[in-house]
Length: 253
Image (cartoon, rainbow, N blue to C red; front, side):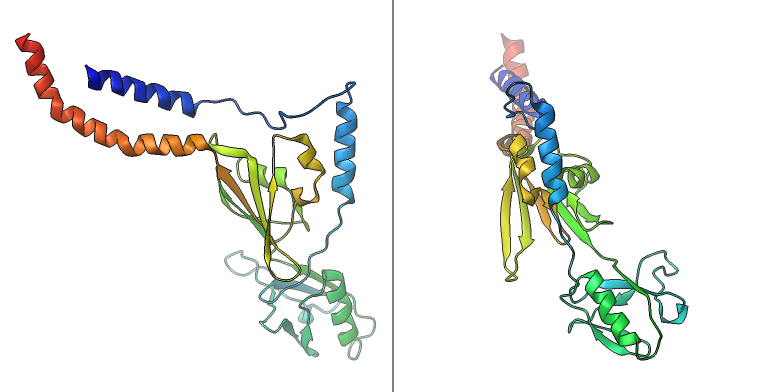
């Protein structure tokens, strides 16, 4: 009987911790019904954030030289995967005619200017387009589909990244979303976003850039549920062992 009651209690605790309603931005303070004003301010701040990716060693880039297909790269191979030109460890690429061009540390616009200047010796008024093919961000932790997310644009909002990862799980800590990114001195820095606070939308770190890592931390309930799952087989074993003795005691009474 004690084992039966204990089992019921364990199932009760587990059921209570696995079903819960979550609301984002539940710490919103609305005064004088200015909800629309808050959203406009948020959008204006997000749109005002400017960022342009700088090419790094080991990036792959697509190069198009208009009217000169022989100098352009093919971005699709037989397996339909993007290839392009590899920026070597020194930050250079090799292009026909001009051979080596240093691109590391340059934006895409600056890279286009550098290649055009080098091609002017051989081509009259060259027109070049450069695109980085491997811009990605990474999201791990308590999301339904963790992994790398390809960035078609220069950047993406945190909410869009979470949406691409299939949304948060029920055990995600919505008050502690970690954004890990490389700083100017090549040292990683970590920032924390609280998704239950509308003011978090006004923070520049809500914009996710290439090579950023977003870690959605678990809440305390996941640790509790994990502990229950770990000890549950032990209670099951004890129950199977004691069942014959309980049956005998019941029949004897």
